[in-house]
Image (tube, rainbow, N blue to C red):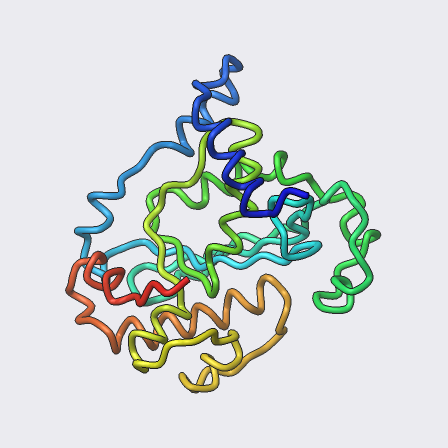
Amino acid sequence: MATPSLLQSLYRKLFDQRGPPADPRLRRLWDACRLTTRRSLLNTPVNQCRFIVMDTETTGFHAYAGDEIVSIALLEYDGLRPTGREYYQLINPQRPIPDESQRIHGISDTDVKNAPTLRQALPEIIEFLQDSVLVGHHLQFDLRFLNRTLHAWLGCKLRHPTLDTMLMFQAWSGRLGHYELEQVARACHIEVRQRHTARGDARTAAGIFEVLAGRLVDPKSPVKSLINQQVNDE
């Protein structure tokens, strides 16, 4: 039986060979997805950069073995200050939500019955993410779900610079290991509200980001200096 990591590798080999879609509407989304200002973002001072804090809730843990997003939250930051601009959307996973997942995040099949699918929501999501550094706790988990769908649909993936609040915590504390959101929040004296909801967890991660970014680097330093602080043990 193919493992999730093997399936992920096969997806990459298959879809990285595809060109742009012929459909003009999809081509615009493909261009927006692939448009990268990575170099300029990396050299932008932290206090002048646009950050998007992200969180998702899903049907399960395996992006490459059939699980899907059921909600997504995006919070905009101008430097280390929230702008108040947010994006939140329930997502129809087009499959039943397992009972054990419903018990965690509280989202039922009825809640998402009339919600858009991820493909339907992606144009708004990609637009919101433009020209930003992405931030989240265990961020690669969320990105796997988005990039899996982008690969399958358009043959592209997000190319944004990323900051993981767990890796930032490792860099600041000097302690390696796997830390859940509430553990890092407690160490940073951030109140946890609405745990296991996309909006609540995004707000908690945002608070952690504010605290740790200010402790790790001078806000006038380029974003790459903050990214380079991360301890990559994943």
